[in-house]
Image 1 (cartoon, rainbow, N blue to C red):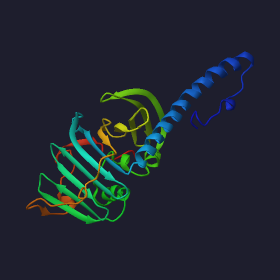
Image 2 (cartoon, rainbow, N blue to C red):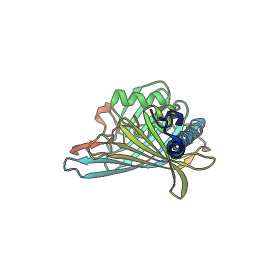
Image 3 (tube, rainbow, N blue to C red):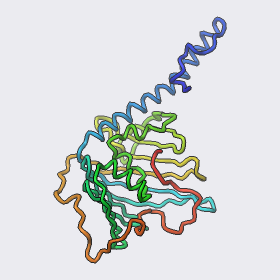
Image 4 (cartoon, helix red, strand yellow):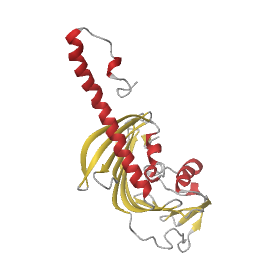
Amino acid sequence: MSPCEKPWFMRPALPGGVTSFLGAVALGVLLAPCAQAQDAAKILKAMSDYVTAEKNISLSYDADIEVVTSELQKIQFASSGQVQLSRPDKVRITRTGGYADVDLVFDGKTVTLLGKNLNAFAQADGPGTVDQLIDGIRDRYNIQMPGADLLLSRVYDELTSDVMDAKHIGQGVIDGVTCEHLAFRGAEVDWQLWVESGAKPIPRKYVITSKHVTGAPQYTLRVKDWKTDVAVAADAFTFKPPADAKRVEFVALQVDEVPPGQVTVGQVTGGTK
């Protein structure tokens, strides 16, 4: 039972003044983590409500994914990209790095993955929502999208489903913006989130740590240029194949930022669960 679940009056009785003194100290010790957890949950819920209430979102991002080599050297691979989301069933995500240049487009009926560096694309029917898309491409094609859980309509439930401990650490500054720093622990991963302070609780930084993998590799996502008032072009989610692009199966496309053949003992492969 966590400190937040164990009330102070369940502590064993001690004699006289000892009870009074130790009771006050113990109550303070119990209330501190309780307050941290409650603050973390409140801030995370405010962020989730704000994000899911927005129908159209555009943003850019920088991402770092770590691997731990067989020699126990930690290496980071960096990429950048853009996201355009129109709830409930349209999204476009680009990512450009040193080893992959991909464009994922979903129009509510068809998902297309374009490997720009290969001039090849794969398509599949997948009518449904963005939530279903994110789950589907992970389960059917083993395409991992760390950080994509921030786009889900059920983001609060998804993020907290495996949480065993939560803390509001304090404040930090991301790209000149004051943020609330939250830290959570789960069975397989720990994760941190920096949420913009004030009336617009935007997620600004997200770090996932695979704590049971050798070297505890991390995935870091930094969100920039968050906008909700941008007009969506009519063809924003329409896929137009480049000239001479060939159609292939999903397995033929290199979408991982970690280069093929990298010998590792561990890397971040998923989200918070």
